[in-house]
Image 1 (cartoon, rainbow, N blue to C red):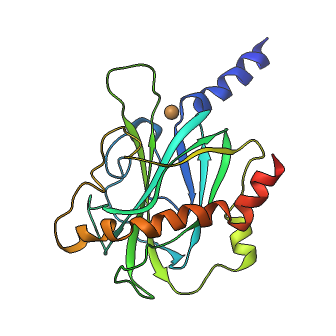
Image 2: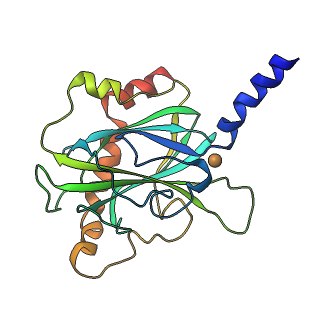
Image 3: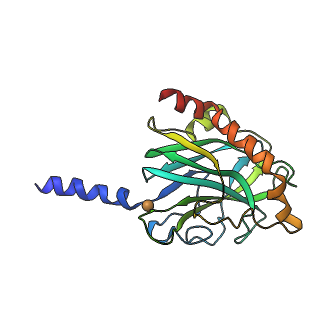
Length: 223
Ligand SMILES: [Cu+2]
């Protein structure tokens, strides 16, 4: 009886969680404040950054809703604040719980980045839909150093796992996961805001290359 209660309780955190970013290492995670823009309540840049390949690297997520809309944004610079105006991966919908790997998230072409450029990756998901009048999102950020070197095969395999029940059920969904028209792509002024516009084609390609990513493909094949 008691052990049953303990077991039941141990599942509660999973029930109430949203998602986690396990690679590259997130700034931090707290379920209660994960809906805080832009980085789930962690505003301070990490002291220790993860090297992230410019040509494409995995994002290892842990999905904790049975169905989740996910999008990936980036900001360039040492401390970009809330300036996540680069669409690295347009919104997609994933069904399933547990490990989910976006196999090849690339820095969109046309950005002025090189080996050693500092950047921050922001993962945004929709939250419990629940039928309310408003939707909130969950946010998690990882501070990275962009590098030319791709991940080794073994590092890639360590950082890119898919639970067998994972399925991408929709891709290239317009807007962002909180259901607004998106603060990331609607800005069309000059300067860095021009980047997302210029990367429209690139992000399409990225989504395709994710689907064709070695591990992503393996995950789908297992279905
Ligand atoms: Cu949740």
